[in-house]
Image (cartoon, rainbow, N blue to C red; front, side):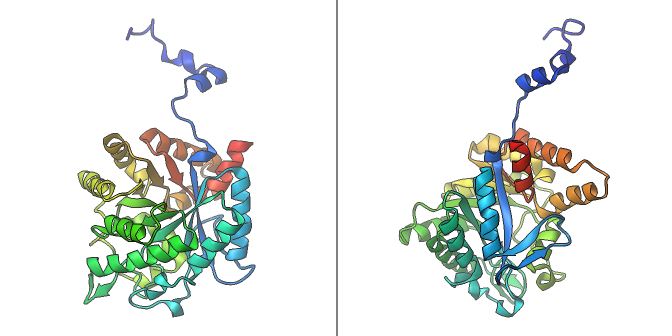
Amino acid sequence: MPQYPQTRMRRNRQTDWSRRLVRENRLSVDDLIWPCFVIEGTKQYEPIPSMPGVQRKSIDLLVEAAKEAADLGIPAMAVFPVIDPELKDEDGSLAADPDNLICRAVQALKTAVPEVGVICDVALDPFTSHGQDGIVRKGEILNEATIEALCAQSTVQAQAGCDVIAPSDMMDGRVGAIRSHLDAQGLSEVQILSYAAKYASAFYGPFRDAVGSKSALGAADKRTYQQDPANGDEALREVGLDVDEGADMVMVKPGMPYLDVIWRVKERYQMPTFAYQVSGEYSMLMGAAKRGWLDGDAVMMESMLSFKRAGADAVLTYAALELARRLQA
């Protein structure tokens, strides 16, 4: 490449039309997945203080919101249930009940907006009284017992109409077990999006507020099964195992603090790779925007482009509706 003054990098940046022509990455509504929180009741709407602009909604209101998402062209929603503490128990047994909140929400969504994909988290933490993702005995998470419970949870969600089962628990071997279990139940068309590289992150706090698992978890943590934030090579091993076990798509979570991991995963495996802009990331940006410290629209769009630049094929973001509106403007 010739040097300055023959090469002037600013030439291509001088005009809007030129910048648009040479732009390497673009964000479209097809890149967005909208995470939502569902609660019991009718016409129930609860703002989440730690997540500006995000609400828990009863099924009827969630369906109405899903219709707007469909009109905007958002391809998929990820739905998370907020369970009454009185219905939780040590083993999260409600997770396998075909009449539980998440299954009823999925049925309603697929009836009203069948063109929108529905992604269901598979983990026990919304249902357990202790807030952990698995079955606990004497302070230890039991891997195989948890997998058995996750298979049952996956089945009722898939039978309710869930399009994508998303194991977020980080138990060893759970993707293969769930794939085999779904296939045996005649549910071989249901996709699996593995939370393949999920870190034991401090960025999940507002989400745990939203689903009510923070108070249950207390001072405990999830470091015996979620990944150490210091490790990158380990993430590649985790993803490789899940790919071999039958994952159709993989996810890195959190997103922006782990752009290097997203890049490495995409480069190594060439798999559909998603990023999750988790609650803490979202709330930092929105909280700063609310105080006038940042331009909220600009930093959110820049964040999305950074995920695309790192190799993400899609992004789970609580800002999906606003981003879709802006992209269609």
